[in-house]
Image (cartoon, rainbow, N blue to C red; front, side, top):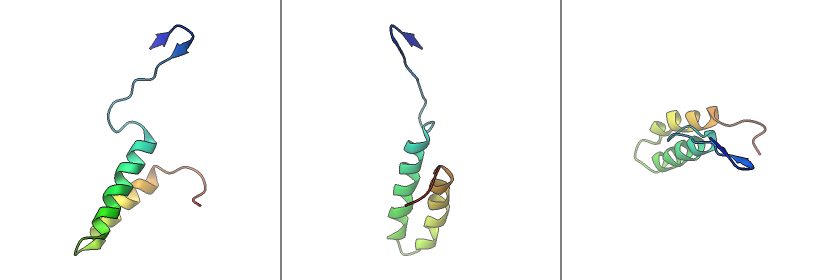
Length: 56
């Protein structure tokens, strides 16, 4: 959407990669504290799929 001297990007829920990374990483961390922490693998792998660049 154009505005005077600026642009506005309108995104739907789960369309911004950093938001999805944080959501999935948080879900994965919470699953690590459950009786079956292996359930965290999917969420943590999904979070890493949104990561770009060096981890560190």
